[in-house]
Length: 402
Image (tube, rainbow, N blue to C red; front, top):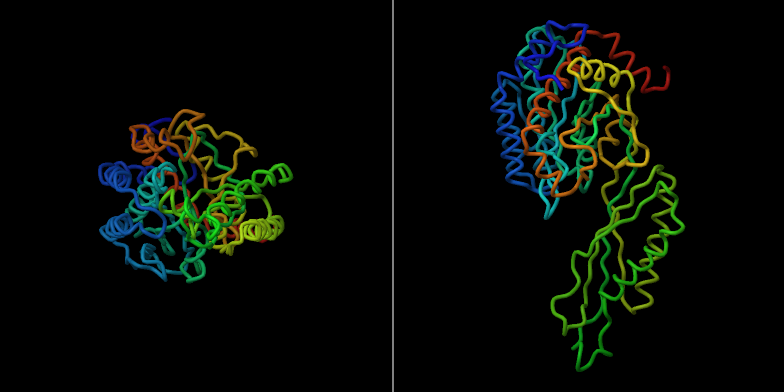
């Protein structure tokens, strides 16, 4: 990867793209400091109060009119910056994520996504007098759980956008994005407390029900399709070994390829919960929430991103269909043209959602990738502002007319 200061941007609009990269470089310390600050203060989904405040303050310093909170979510942010040549142009969304994983921190590298989104917004502010349309910065919370972008879609915060751009760190550089659909499930079993040694027959063990559910899921996996997943953890399993637990709680996720299969899995999962409750004499409740869609990746936008990326010596690798995750960016892509490219911040083979990836997300290479991603997102966004036909082409593809 060639550094921003040394690289030559791709045509067209190479002169403006060079200025966008220079604007990112000029604010290098501010962007990297934000990434490190968010990394050092991890906040889980819906609780990203400090990160959201820092992100909001950063874009406000660069001329954006900021709403914080935006919509129903206290940790959602929207910043708007009108172009100096009038409002009758495209509205381009620059997205940022900043939630962390409970107990792990930024093992998905969302600190780099927050900082790169802010960096792209800063770069576009530097050329805003030349733009026709509006830059819309969206700080999007709760990606790891709860599908915060869907809340923001429902609140109208994406209304009127012509494109949405969001970088993601990875162990591989690949511009194409495919995602599994996913839903969150919280299961609660309710039983009856009793003395575990003196009178265990008087109790109904909620933890037994949860253990039985995990065992049933393990057996179910043999019949799952290759593209489907079920995984979960125990949130609550009792308070003392000598008390029959009257309450046990588990949290699960169901990623898979299609919405129809997801519905089928819901029904089977509910049946497993009911069976575990019946076997143990407990009551069982499964609450489904969130919901991430598959990705409708926009090739029109992606091809421009790849051209900009290639100019800096970054090689685009093919998508590996066997290594797919899920994200509420898929929900956005079902509503408007969107891309979610990945750039490597570490050696290939380092697992996401791991301590190794978390540590890499605050390392020197990740810092350079954060700056590069900011420039590439800004450069791709500028092309949309400069070329109305490109916006039209992205929408034609989105509608299936390409």
